[in-house]
Image 1 (tube, rainbow, N blue to C red):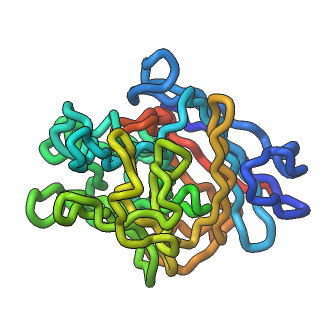
Image 2 (cartoon, rainbow, N blue to C red):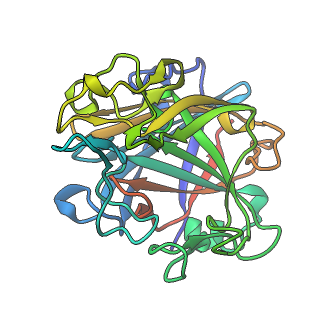
Length: 324
């Protein structure tokens, strides 16, 4: 498909990262409208959504404002639920045959950048679809990897329950690794180096979750479907009754390369708004480097409505350019 141009304007002041589009720079930046297709859920359960992308830069930082329509806020990711007999059960999609939960998950979005124009066909025609390989074993929705050695992509992956609520986007990357059930279950998808933080699953120990949040609130009664690392305490079963749900994941901000994308992400009235920032140049080989404002940079976007992998995506490649 024909590439779509996205123009980053030069700002006079940095926007406040609060997921509010009222900053003056967003009144200046051109709005690129995107139709994302072929996912699951969204409006009328048709799997499609409408989105917008804006971009700006100031000194050494890129800013982006991304919105997309989503009728529901989805944060109920694999919770533990107390049963009538007092036991605890992790809720999972009974239709999931492996890495494809579309019932108990979270809302997400992803941006994939073509690093150094290394991915053949990305900027010119196919966008991030060049890295999607549907129909292969590994995941029901296919595997993700680049075609040849030396082709790499930078993936900015907002997972709301696993860090989005903290104001951080998970910085990952993509190479040519093929799926292998023992050695490479994620195929080409990898995470940037980090020096601390991240997310870890809560285990069932003697039939009960090992940890809970110190406020002892059920997630479905005013609590959260995540546990902040600083709020993690040993589980107290006496605090909960049948039907209560508690988080199955502990989350802390990434430090290091994996945590260099800041964001504010808010869902309100059927729409997500994400306002994010990253240094133009990070020096990391697994990051796209916006080191020449006279060049253009190809990217693609995808949106997930309570879906582990089944995303709606922009079919046309997006091309970011910088206004001087």
